[in-house]
Length: 141
Ligand SMILES: CC(C)(COP(=O)(O)OP(=O)(O)OC[C@H]1O[C@@H](n2cnc3c(N)ncnc32)[C@H](O)[C@@H]1OP(=O)(O)O)[C@@H](O)C(=O)NCCC(=O)NCCS
Image (cartoon, rainbow, N blue to C red; front, side, top):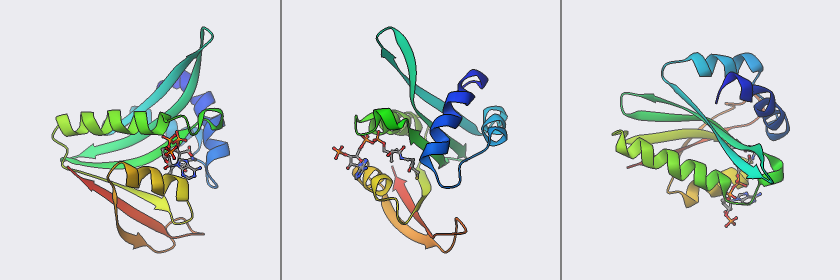
């Protein structure tokens, strides 16, 4: 993800989450040395479209997935799966041993996606989002 992607990322972010990240949060992740911010772009009739993005941190072999979203126009096409599988494979090769994330209890789509990729539900963080609990999901390589 580069600074030029942020306008499009924000459009997707705002229709994807009840409490979307701000521009400043994305800008700060791009600068953060422990953060990886990646986009998935597709070619649509010669035009490049931003289909999905992902942000995660890696600290001492532990990865924390902070944000992932797919442009609503491109959902259910397997893009989140492709992006996550690619990132998980790169993590494995970089000797990451564990990946964890928080997901809203009500977010069935995301929980199902992570479950299919091998994540297990570990525990809950009560009222993590202010209006809902988070389920912490973990994948150990
Ligand atoms: C969750 C999200 C990232 C999935 O992206 P996607 O590219 O549509 O996902 P995929 O096409 O790779 O789907 C993989 C599997 O996830 C599950 N899944 C995805 N969307 C689903 C939905 N709306 N309902 C139920 N299951 C769903 C299915 O098991 C799916 O496999 P299938 O299509 O073979 O049935 C996307 O819906 C999104 O951006 N949501 C808003 C942001 C968000 O919730 N991010 C996660 C925060 S923790």
